[in-house]
Every structure is written in C-alpha cells, then in structure tokens.
Amino acid sequence: MTSPAVWPAKPQYASAVRRPGEVFADPRLSHCEILFGATGMPLASTGRNAIVFAARTRQDERVAIRCMSREPASGGERYRALTAHRHAQPVEHGTPLVEAEWIEHGIRLSGQWWPLVLMPWIEGKLLDEAVSDLCGDRAALHHLIGNWRVAMGQLTSSRICHGDLQHGNIIVGDDLRVVLVDLDAVWVPFAAHLAPGEFGHRNYQHPHRDIGHWGPGADAFPALVILLSLRAVAADPSLWADRPDGEHLLFTRDDLLAPGRTKIWKGLARSPDTAVRRLAERLTDLCAGPPDAAPPLEDVLRACAAGGPPHPAYAAS
Image (cartoon, rainbow, N blue to C red; front, side, top):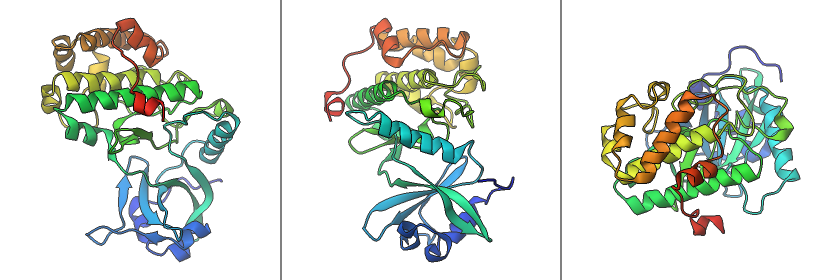
C-alpha cells in the first residue's frame, strides 16, 4: 500500500469505529460490536503510534482492532513474514507474541482505505501497572520474573526478536504470564531484509543503539533491563516508590547513558539481593560497551549466578 504522508489521527478512528458496518471490509469486523466504556466513548488503549479498540465478534470472541496513526515500516510485509516464520518453525510451547493479522483494506475513512491489525483481546495489565500492584509481594514478583525468563527463552529458541521490549508492549495476566504486543518492529529470518521502523523505547534500549543494530540479538539488552528492574523491586520495594514519574520502570535513558553514576545505580549497589548487585555491575559494563554486545538473558544470569530454573508451571504449559 502506498500511503499519504499524513495518517488519520486517533480521534478520527474513534469516531469512525462507531459505524462498523460502514467502515470495515472484513466481515468479522463489519458485523462486530464495538465495546464502549462508562463515558460513552469506545473502549480503547492509546500508544505512541496507534490506538487499539475493543470489539466483540458475532462468534462472541473479544478482539482488539489496532489502528495506526503513522505508517509502520514495511508493515504488511513484516506481519506476513512473521506469520510465515511461525508456520515454518512451530514452537512446542508457543511464543509470548500475540497472534496478529495484518488487514490491508482494514478501515475506510474519507474515501481512503487504511490497514489495521486484528488481534485477540488480551486481558491483563501493562507491565508497569502490574509492578505497581505487586510491589511488596516478593513471591509474586519472582513468579513474574520466572515467566519473563521463559518468555525470553521462547523468543530465542524460536528465532524471533520483538524489537521494542518495554512496559507498554508487555501485558501481564492475572496468572502473571506475559504477552508481547505491538509487533511493528519484529524481526524474523523472513524479514531480515526489512529495515526496522523504530529503535525501540529510549528508556530500555542500549543508549548507543542505531539503525544498524537490529536482528536476532536486539532484545537481549532490554530484556536484562526489565529483569533487573523487577528483581531489584522485589528485593527493595522503596526503589519503586522513589522512582520519578515517567515512561520507564527503574531506568531512564539518562541512567543508561551514565552507567554506575546516577541515583538508581547507587540504589542497586546497596541492594540486599546479591544477584541484583551483580546484574547491575553487568548492565553497567554493557551500557559502556557496543550496542550488540549483550548476550542472551540466560547467559547473563548464569554468569552472575543469579538464576534458578524458570517457573515450572509456565515452562511446561
């Protein structure tokens, strides 16, 4: 699809979806029921580059309709490559990625067709919201950490890179399993020729990552940032209470640019958990090194003797 430079704004989509029979071509959506909240507005989740609406199909399936406010790089080709990869290399225990379908003629606004992504609706909370709820419950946070390790292991074994691991793209269910959404930056071997559309969230990526650092190892650094943040909060809940407001867990880009020298690094150096102190030292080294030097998460944990097996209930399911 060749698209104009200006894509519809989120309020335009919110107005259009009120008329599913008029704006959707796919019969699953043209006959769907858009779900509304108490304010009378469509239930929606807004991200940096898209708005996601909740709907119920005629088969009583709850789905998520993701409408984009800017063009994702090689969007349709990337999603089709992911589907082809999944079919070519099925994984015994699946992957943590949400199932997602790119629909080229997705929604019609002002005489123009725009693509959308159709997904099952995932019940749960974004990672930062889940951590706020679990803060002070060490056992639950360690359960979540175990599930995070399993999810990252599944990505590694299935040769998939999400490309933008961050709190807003991670949904935590009531059982503390994680599902990864927003697949606009995903890498699989079938998509190796496609340029990434984004570098990932600045508070999670290596501070010197650029367009040249993309591929099967690109998730390793943010995966460690997230695991270390979770483990540090489990050991010392005051770290969560003291964090400044913003789009991050414990680390900001300024912290990653000054490894070992900002307030959060000093707090981690005093952690009662030996593993947190060792992992923080390792992340300090990685921040100062090249963007592609981070090894897989389990290799880091083994080197720091910070592990224990993944949570068995999730690993075997």
